[in-house]
Length: 112
Length: 115
Image (tube, rainbow over all chains, first blue to last red; front, side):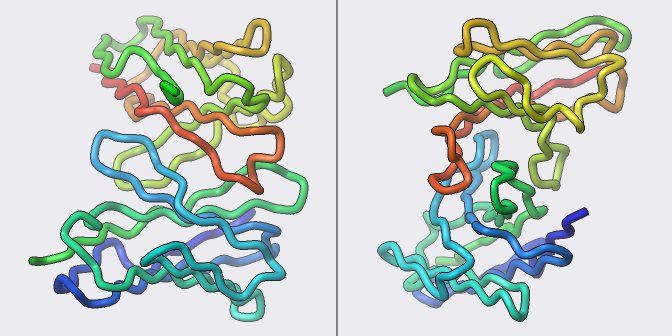
């Protein structure tokens, strides 16, 4: 079965710095990789999707990279703000399966 | 638009009692998912519906869990009888048919505590 590892359980950074979160996976290569944000007591909120044939995707201060050789995705938040503090989840889907497998998440804290 | 609506938000029951969760997905979304999220973990799929058909229920503990999606809209997830290990957050999500290509929309979840 698919195994997904997110680099660390918790990450603390100073406001204004770039936060980099890692998602590593084993076994099959997904057709799509998604990133979600989850706040305490809330459901995950979709942020970005990247396809297996894409290297990089950007949305405002967010950037996602996808390296199918390394079986890794990096999620960057530039100019981080305290409001970016949350848990970030990566999720993978196989071609045609329409079934997302989620990692355990990384809890990001941006310190003012 | 209201988004995915789940109720109740919280539920505390004694073990061996039954419990039911309700989900109203986003209008027009064909696909509905029930996930379970344990503390400090990512969500894990329990069941996926395409319209009213359960197309993936391989992770649903069928001895005590059941689900239905009548008329391909609202859905209910039931546990009978509940066990202590069922304490978790139960999340409902919906998406267009090819949700993997567009992202899922999740509800706020139902936090179940079994005592």
